[in-house]
Length: 167
Image (cartoon, rainbow, N blue to C red; front, side):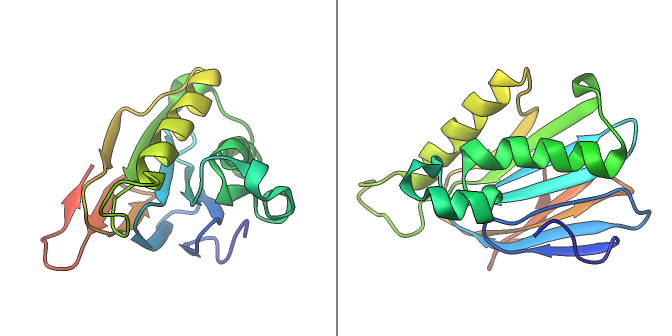
C-alpha cells in the first residue's frame, strides 16, 4: 500500500507509507519479529515507514513484486522511492533513519532469529545507500506498536503492560 489518507496512514505487514501533510501520522501495530524502518526528511518534513517482515525476497519473488515493503531488500529501495515521490526529492544528508521491532516473540530457542536477521539486513541495505540508523529500539521479547508523527518527528512506541516510550 502506498497511501491512504494523506494525514492518517495505517500500515499492515509489508506496507509502506509516507506523508508531508501537516498533522500527518503513520502507524503500524504489533511488530514482533517484523521491523519498522522509519525515515524523516529534515528539510521537507516528509515522514515515511515500512513494516518489514522478512530479510530477503528470494523466498517469494512474486510477493516482493506485489508488496515490496514485505522484504528488507525490496522495501528499503521502495521506501526511498516513495519519499522521493512524496517529498519531491530528497538529499540523504537530510534523512534521519530509525529502527524498531525485531523482537523474539515466537522463537524461544532462537532457531530462526528472524528479528535479528531483519535488523541486520535492513542495516546492510541502508549502508549501501550511505545511510544508517541514528537510533533504534530493537530485539527483546515484546511486541511494539509504532506511531510516527509528522509535525514533531516523534516516534512513540507502546507495548502491552509498559508505559509508552520514544526513540
